Image (cartoon, rainbow, N blue to C red; front, side, top):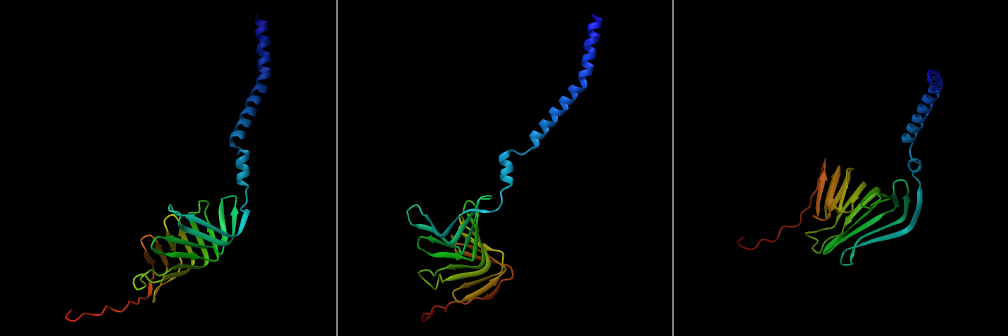
Length: 209
């Protein structure tokens, strides 16, 4: 019996280094597996910012619940990038419509739009035009020019942090930035505001007033 135990002990001692090596090898393989990116993750990380399709002379329209046109977006060319699902547009122009209010148009040389179409950055010769209202004395034409504008489509806001020139009727203003809320019709000029505000003639005074 003692001889058998001694024999088994000798076999175990001889196999122990091999067993330890197998455990270490197995652990190393497991660590490599859990720390290695999956095939689809690796493929995703190697995607380049390259276009996968484009459209020429496109026009897209968003309708209001009553079927009227709410937004119309046009451009000479729209290119889609697969890696981040963004778009680049050549000579983009967006026009927003609201009932009983003059439309607002924004355009530029180049536009970049996020995947959801909720944010559009306009670069180069950016120009925003709000046509005059029914009463030009109270709601004159408004224009803004800058090298950059950002359109927040869902909020109906146009803004820029670049130098901007604003014209409202005969009034001319310049500033370091601008926020235009098309819903509230408010214009906020940001930093180093300069210009000339021209007001209309005062109403004629009645006798005895």
